[in-house]
Amino acid sequence: MAISVCGAAIDWAATGTMLQGWGTLIGAVAVFAAAWIGANTFNSWKRQKITERHIEQAERILTAVYKARRALSRVRSPLMSAHELSVAEDQLSGHENWKYNTADKQRRLCVAKGYYNRIASTEAERTLLDGCLPMSRALFGEEVEKAIETVVQQFWAVKAYADAYIDDNGNDVAFSRQISMALYELSSTPDKGDEITDAIHAAIKTVEGVCLPVLRLEEPSAK
Image (cartoon, rainbow, N blue to C red; front, top):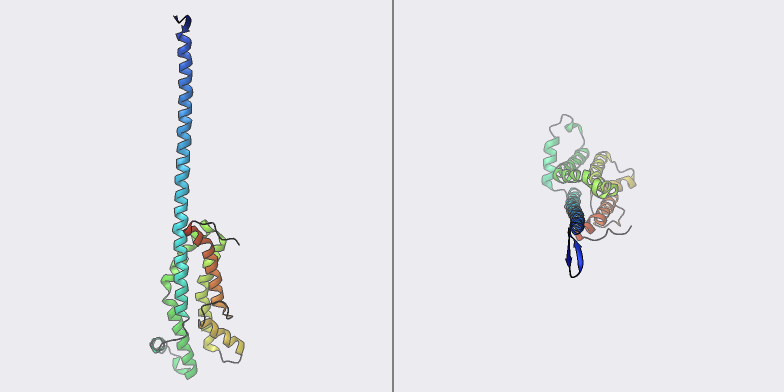
């Protein structure tokens, strides 16, 4: 059906078909736009959640390594109190072979036991570190995971040197000095030839290089 308007004929059937086509096109554009907005909204939400996850774990890892550093400082304190030595002696004196040791050997055993007790008291800090390992690798890579493992290993390095201290007779002066430097934290800087302090500083520097920029929303430090 056609109607003449101002001398021009309007074909309403054709017009309806055209409008229907435009409606279909507009509908398709609206669906596409909605899908695009939805996808971008989801991706934005996903990025936000991943960022939050990184921040959460970075804070957890840094907290754990800082607490472990302080715990290792306590373990390696050069001053062992009379109370610590008394507790150690009480724990050891009940052993059948205790009385057969010389006075010097008994003293060394008590000192070593004092270190064992100190290490045992750091269980919470070591557990916190261990709990960081799975996500540290997943989110920040192998380097951070290895750095955390290095910090954990220093507790057992101190124990190994405490073991060596028991039978150290001083004949190997260099080794005796190595034992002393491992057991006693005499400096907080890694420039005194102290292998344990060096290892702790290097490991924490690695962790900070990756985790601090995450907390500050910066790019990781260049290597």
